[in-house]
Image 1 (cartoon, rainbow, N blue to C red):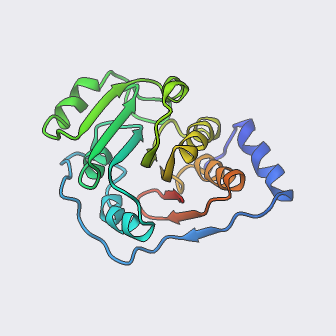
Image 2 (cartoon, rainbow, N blue to C red):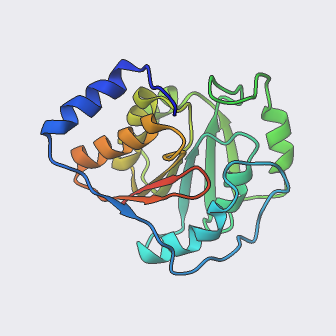
Length: 204
């Protein structure tokens, strides 16, 4: 079992004991459909692409604009581009403490996604991006460094700028699940959780 050492995580867990409970609703897709665009690369996101259309239909999400924080090699970006007219992918493209990547992979990811004309990549830290972006998106995907503090900061902003926000790794990182729970507590939105593929939290 993973031991979390982050102070902000434990502060949230402890204070959450006396706050209103946030139920985690199991997300059971009515059907699965393979995305038209799937990159042939290794990924922890494998399988999530099959429920994207179900999420869009169930929650009646428009498909004009999608923002992704955390592109990495581009697997999720390509999958999302099967459903949204425009995808904006924001990443430092330098990896983080929770990835095995320790080199600049911007050029590789750009090549991986070069055939998709509805994807635009931006090299930026999410903290810099949210300071200047006042746009509203139909869906935002958060898959950044998996700390409570960063997930909460990025996710709370995202919940104010999109109808639906999805978070990868709710099952493999307790910090991510707790951050999603606290965002739902503050916004009054619902927390659905898909347990496969290391977990996908859905705020809507």
